[in-house]
Amino acid sequence: MSLSLICFYTGYFFRKRNLSAHRIWNLSGLGFNLSAAIYLLAMKYLLGGMEAHSIFPGVANWIIQTHRFFAAVALIMMLVMAYSGIKRKRNLHVKLHRIFLPLYTIVYVSGLIIFQTHPIS
Image (tube, rainbow, N blue to C red):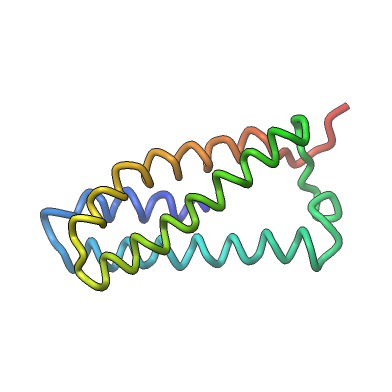
């Protein structure tokens, strides 16, 4: 997830300077994000749960569910942004990035706070 965040902001930096670099960085961010999301979902649902991999929730369940809801919204937005960028639907792409980047950053930071690598006493 860290690599995807770095890629998305680097791609944003290149949006007016170098369109080719913008595409490469953002598609790299998409790839890193999808890889991490698939890994986390597999860990949770196929590989024994998060706790079996030393990832423990540090907050109430409703906060975790809220985090997951906004993560899903960010994922859908990311895919729509990729589609709109590839298809050159600039108006939609520009409107979405104004929401996506702050939302994705909040989801990323909240995930760092919510999930711990040691059990809460």
